[in-house]
Image (cartoon, rainbow, N blue to C red; front, side, top):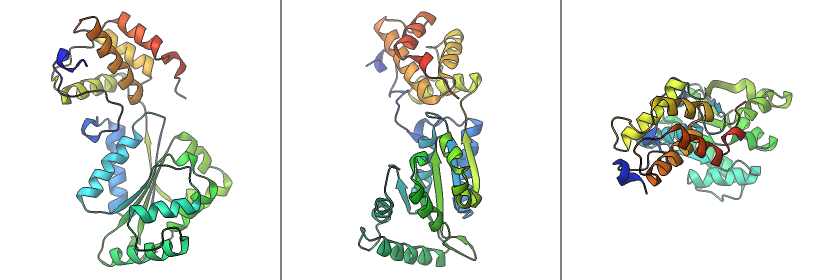
Length: 274
């Protein structure tokens, strides 16, 4: 709606996790590098955590692109509110296992056969589980047991579990100690600093066609950072609304007054970060 007004070729603040718009903050760069390293080195269990909206799903999308480009098969469990039977059915579907997908036994046999065949070719396979904080104990236990599949060169299945900080809290409970002890790598995404917030906004605008960020002056950028606590998803919502407001008022520059209106509409004061 406002793209032509600002000379943009795409929406710079889409809420969808698009790797093309990845801003590589030090934390995000380190997290992605650790995910790729963990898979390549066959570390087994890798944990990715972060507050809501800090970019975990975007990290997973970047990892999926990497796996696709290297022809590494993976199963992606995006709905974590599953029974153990549904969990195995989704694995069988994503990996296209030749078995009766509603039979856990047949899925495990087919999965083990596939993993051994790929290991003999010095290849690996990946399981990605998003929203891990919602996983029930029995599903987490099944995931732990899958992590026991290994040969002398390393783990046959690389397992990445992503979730909110509640996942870290859950794993600290005594009943999860066996899974906790198997985690080889931990990655934590943190909110942006004020400098990173400004860089993030400029990067997204540049990738949408505005090479020199000229919509948000320094005082507005400072308000955006303070109001969003440096959370990328909230930054996107605020900036998208600010562009729309600026367009409606026929102004190519956002003002503090516009920001305050948007902040009230989005209830930013109700989005504290713990």
